[in-house]
Length: 72
Image (cartoon, rainbow, N blue to C red):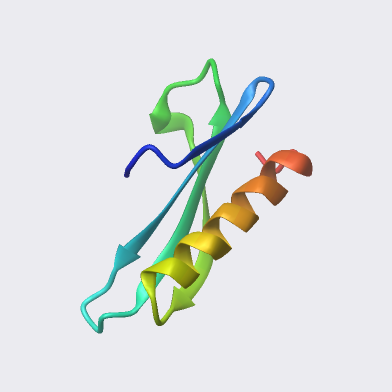
């Protein structure tokens, strides 16, 4: 993962786009409390997209929603 991180108070959401063997990009979000280690993250699958840009945009939007709605 890169430094694509959103934080809202005590919660952190990391997001990324991972290229798959078929050249699609999987958008991914990982959320946790800031005081917890990364191993405690909850994975939220976002979907597959034809481009990295689309995947990252969707993942960022989903990460923001997870923080807003306290999805942990």
